[in-house]
Amino acid sequence: MSSAIEKIQSNRSSSSDTVSTIFRDNNAKELEEIESYNEGKTDPAEYNYKNDPENPMNWPKKKKMSGLIVVSMNSFMGYFSSAVYMPATHDIMVYFKTDLTTINATIALFLLMNAVAPLIWAPLSERVGRRWIYIVAMAIYTVCTIICGISTNLGLFFAFRLLQGIFACAGQMLYLETHFLWKWVS
Image 1 (cartoon, one colour):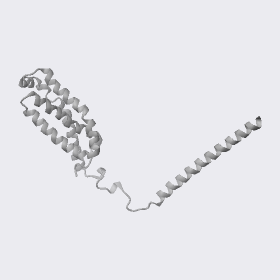
Image 2 (tube, rainbow, N blue to C red):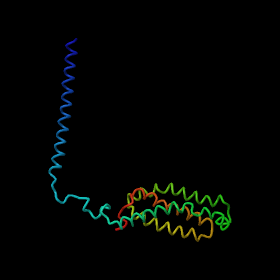
Image 3 (cartoon, one colour):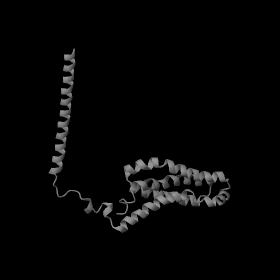
Image 4 (cartoon, rainbow, N blue to C red):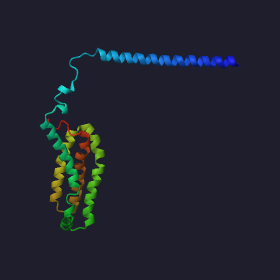
């Protein structure tokens, strides 16, 4: 019986040595391939980020600052317009002949759209590009703001306040993705 146990143990130790040796040999071969690939690259046209004029780190300071200002203002407009008319709620209530709860509901709808719309803007910005999302959202937001300002009935004010929330959040959502600089200012 002891010879059978010794035979099993010797087979186990030899097979584990074989597996570890094979694993070690495979890793060594892969490592040699990677090193030979890297050593073989002596192409002078290799990418150098320090000489790339499209790299935002190499942009002139004026271009960097203008990009920062555009992106920052686009983000700021959503936060600012969420409750900018809060001090005038009484005047708006009188103008539309309604109660305070209804006027506060426009702020709630704006914030709701600010929370839900990034679920649409984020994948769309990956598909279309951030530049077009910024431009289109800013333009439509501006139109919605003007219509909110000249609206004569409460339904129109509600509808465009809702749309204003959808388009204002694009700047807030993309602001974190751009890291202050991108190709909008070319």
